Image 1: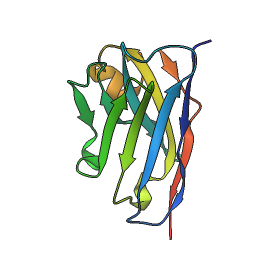
Image 2 (image 1 turned 45 degrees about the horizontal axis):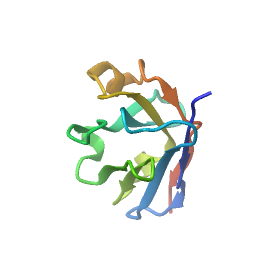
Image 3 (image 1 turned 90 degrees about the horizontal axis):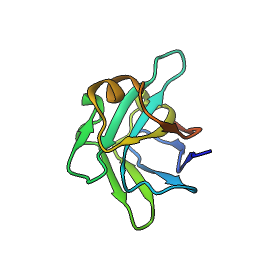
Amino acid sequence: QLQLVESGGGLVQPGGSLRLSCAASSFSLDYYAIGWFRQAPGKEREGVSCISSSSSSINYAESVKGRFTISRDNGKNQVYLQMNSLKPEDTGVYYCAAVPSVCGYEEFQTGRGMHYWGTGTPVTVSS
């Protein structure tokens, strides 16, 4: 079964940084757009960022613009989410997911339509 694996989550103080990684062990990410999603306790899942297969299209949620940066290294078959200036409201479980080529509006807003998902990595921003 095709699966993604996230890593890099943890506990960080407000204002700190984390870099999340998304890797695929059994297939190439080259032809897939990769989205990062998060779900906070008691809240619905939300799209954080998405990068197209060619890196030509990148989307960010308004709440993370200017603080988070998504990138990909197809040679290493990984996608990264650099998170700076973290806030307590960034707390949640972060998931990466894959869909061919580009993230459409529905995929980015809700995650519905994404083909493959990881199991998530928790991020806690607290002093």
